[in-house]
Image (cartoon, rainbow over the protein chains, first blue to last red):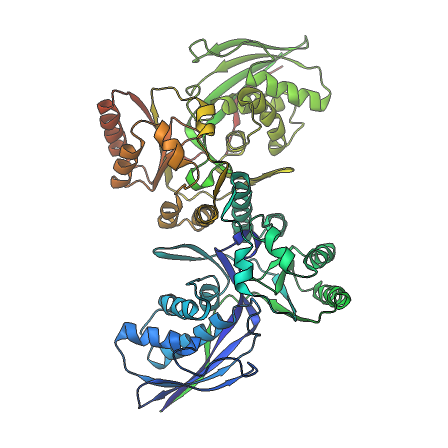
Length: 313
Length: 313
């Protein structure tokens, strides 16, 4: 029998001006998958904790097993696995929950099988799981969860994923208010066509953000963290967005944006010093709106998913 | 009497996916301005060579003197100058001709007055000259001509100009076919509104180009040098564009795009090795279309405009 545990981090996709092309990974939040290689073929989800009973155990519906199956299919392998999933982040929150599960499962399965794949080559299998979970083959959560750091998805045909530089001291505070948001609503408020001048503004900002990351220029990062394409429309779906954003910026945030398609908001900062102010202010503002908010603090994860411990005989 | 000469380089603005936000400077082409500080106040263009008699000598119409006047106004100075301009690049070709003249004049005037301005702080005066010459206060030629290298103009309000990294070995071949193109035609073919998916594609490519420059990843630079916003519409105004582009890519170009609003095309390459093939093929294709083409080769200028020699007493 062979057994292994792997962790994969929560992720923030979109990243303001990086709408649909950028994501980054967090250190302190993520999912853990324990895998047991079995003599019998087939994939079985044996247990899930931390999901409030919401996730499917069926192997053709769970992102862990869908991802592993895609990997086994690519190898032509019949290897069997028992899967135990510990959810460490909230579902449907915009923190890349399904992506973290799929990546943790893939990292564990790859290691248990003797690493037949380079880490980056696991990405297409994780994207398959995203397609099953979200209906769209997005890579902006799975790529940073797998590779760590800030990741650019330049293109999908063929897939072109670039790991960017992360300035030392860059920190993230996540604000997860306790209401549900329908991802399809988030999509439907976007415009199919946009003014050329907005596209140029967005290009300038994303170019500034990328340059700011490489130059470790926090001022430039802050000036560039502006989204004129999605945020102006999506903000109206998010109670308190403008108030919270104004407050975070007044308390020293580099920028605030919608994590994925929300409802979680991410706040980037230089260093951890202002985190408690962010937390205090966010709790105060959401409380006035009758909402609770979970607040998480994290540095940027730069290693991506990784195996924790293993036991082989 | 004080006298000084300064050189400012030709520039490529737009840079494919960097439409309206990026430009870079060339080493081997540019304008030279000789300035004489005079006791009498006032600015006088005393001579212009290399323009075929096309440029205005009137001080309120020449970009050299307009730029210097903007600088003197900012200082509250009445200093007088005689200006001699040697054009080293063709007018109206899309190589930043008016920008090079203005920048060379400013670098010379600043130095003759004892450098009251940091180099980057000359930029607003050069932009004033562009506004007078082109009707629009663009910075994507003057900024790289002044600062050198690849320059991002992230924003104009306020002006936010970022000097990017330039990978060693990056080279440029310029193809200047001998026909005139009206800049207003180039503008008018663009769409006011564009599909959201095109804006995202352009964002991904410009992000890839910026990352490629910092990572010195020529493959990534090449994959990213795609413009889905301007080139598809402007190419139809440029005889032979598709044929020339296909040929250059087949002969090892990293990418080819429209320099500024054309008609000059720029070809980026890793190293100078393929330059003679680019030249040969471009001459052959344009000849078949009944056009002549001037071909220039250059490394990337990373220092911007600079003073050459001076004489003071």
